Length: 237
Image (tube, rainbow, N blue to C red; front, side):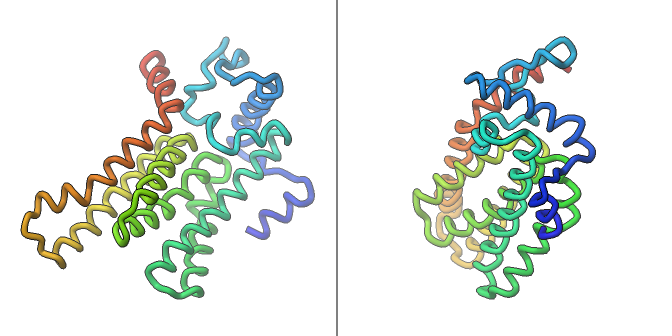
């Protein structure tokens, strides 16, 4: 990551592939609209016009979007990618530390995750890297909720699910949510084998309910992104 950040400090930018040909022009247009005080609902410059909100790879409602008002599109994409890389490493560090209590092992794990080819090679697709940070975060929150159930963890899971969807890469969202669901089931399966509850169905329902509620809340948070995407997918092949 240090080797990637050094060019940024010299005013250079990520440029290859989709960043140069797609994301930078799209966010340049988005910035122009934001500076006019408008939400970019429609892009008139592609194929005679097409929806901008509803494009499944445009993260208009992600919390980083206001930064576009203050920096050019190329610098915004740099900042988003590097911040996402850092958070990938940080959240993976926290997840592993909860299991190992070893700062060294957790640090190495976080560095491996944030510096792995599956992450670094996706820098030309910023929403993929933005989405990747939610994988260790969701697993960490699942562990916290299972260890000490509390409403704050349910809310945190819901917000994380919502932000994952708002990060605007559907395939990564499916993948990470799938991992999280499997992780929840396997952790509960292990707990059930250890506790051997008398009313097994009631036990499963009670333990799964907070995660189901969090998932519903998360989808509700991201509805502003999901509903236009669903409408676009229905209207256009």
